Image: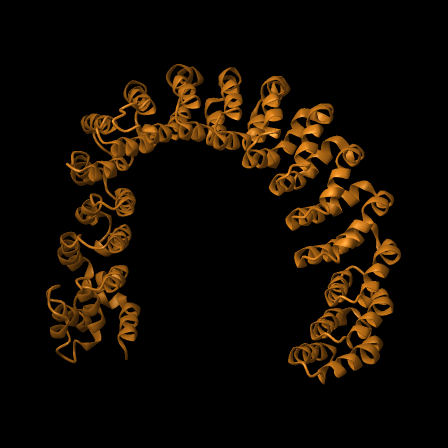
Length: 633
């Protein structure tokens, strides 16, 4: 049995590992008497040979090859199972604590493994033995390792009893908070929220003081970490301390001007924390304690801070409530829509629909018309493509909010401008949301105002724009009615079947099926089927293949007699096509329609054709013909 097989055998029998009196455990104890024994001595006897894979894993923890060490770290749980909980606590954990200096990817894997180690050290009562290696990992230079170690510490904190939190976990937080290097202090910021609720009143006061020190730390990276975690800490702090201590700290971070380095990164992280804190307070407290900070962020000298407030504006709106939104936030939102930075305008524009929807119904029109609509009109002609694309993705959603008259008077002209924009993604975003406008103004108004522009886009040079028009065609067809569709759009739908892009031709064939479902079989026979089948004589073999693709989808909505009378003869003629691709698609099409045909048609029209294709010189044609013949039988 190879090493992997032995290892799997050992893991499969892990229940026996916990039995201290079993021969297996005795052998493990003999083999792994000391973690520093070389592999050669471990494999000295045949009795110990079955445990050799575990010895290899342990030895690989010290191997010079990084990949071997990484593999061994990822299998730490196997080693721990073999050692048992006592030896894992007494030997493996100290060994790991002493060997923290390694490659970053190895340390990251170790930090991840230790977060799930509690069952392997004997359960929650022994969770504290995992703190030393994780504490070491929380101080290393590499950010991702520290973050993973902090995450694991937070996980195992939940398994500590209040007594263990106070005895073991809180001292760890103190040590990290008072570390000489900023790395330990940044890690400490993420541990206060999981520690604070479970300690005594005196220790809580001490933790708040230490967190205050982190918020005013000289190192920007520490203040940044504190800003990112202060909202989480605020959730577990008592209300009197929240108002008296945490919010002043927050306002200090939100106005971080310790400009030895210009720390807009601290201020932008404070925005999200402020929104979290706002959700804990009453409207009056928000207005007096937090509103100045939000005003400052909306007009911050750093565009990144303004971008953050724009990006989180809906969360802010939800947190502060409708009264503060109406009295204060509307002005700032309008200002963000007119920001000098395109990234800020784009982010704010993307929130327009949601912001307006969240306004109380009785004030929506009063707020939108004088405050939001003027800014929207400016954005329609913005010089930045991404701003217009963001606006185009949401502007149609304003129609249900503003109502029919305002949509016709104010929004339709803007839709037309965006439909004719030079950038395809702007046009695409408008087309994709036509149904929301149709529900408000009706198809008659839509056809008069927007249909000419839509028809023009149906021939757009960008194939994705044409594809979007195709996808919305059934909606337009259903609303316009058969007469209007035949007059204005039918020829357009047929032209897509011979488009130069395969995705367009494929979508156009699927479109036919949906149109037949809407207008009925009689319309299909008079209008569509004849035109589709005539393409079978087209000189371009791609168009002949499109005929087959169209038959594939039309057969799903047409009765057997129509398939047999109109489609089978055309398919049979194409079986003699000079192009092999057409011939094997004939076989595939026959396989698809066989379940819909009667036995007479199958016996006298389908089988002879497939039998001939079975003898084709092209291997693909023969293969698909054979598959179709099996279905015939």
